[in-house]
Length: 112
Length: 114
Image (cartoon, rainbow over all chains, first blue to last red; front, side, top):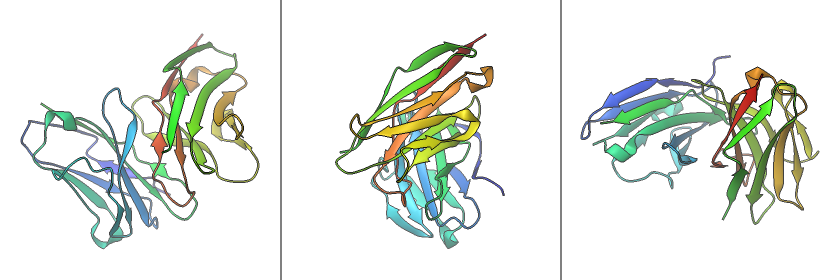
């Protein structure tokens, strides 16, 4: 069974540009989460989807971040426009019932 | 509010020695507790988790952790360290086993010396 996958693994962009991160959860998992780790800090929750619905987006830092999960399968996280403080590793995780959550390898975002 | 404290951002042990990574939490209700490991250049891997039932939880790669409510602790142990255990370890807590909204500790980097 394939695990959680994320694309790209690395992204380097300039301040003001737009970046879209993608996450493919484990097949059949209704719950999908986004987390972020800024260098030197804890891993922090961003938001939670149940199927295609946003269950909890209390961790989203501001309105420059937009997450979608059309059709309840893969999810995207768009940052527009990117700022320097958005640099970090973005993790996606999925779970179903009482399993997991299982994390993907992360996308390392660098904003110059 | 929930919080997690991992004592020691860096821990160094010799190969074959006991591994003890400390985690304390604060929660107003019984928590669900997790340990994850991140090997170099890889993602987070679930080592073990406590939801209900037996307080001693066994995980992968010979690790185990014991939930001690009276001490609000969930320390991770392994009797004998291997070089391959060198990684960063994260303790996390949530209020429900049905949610993956986790509160993480700061992480502990384990160094294993030959």
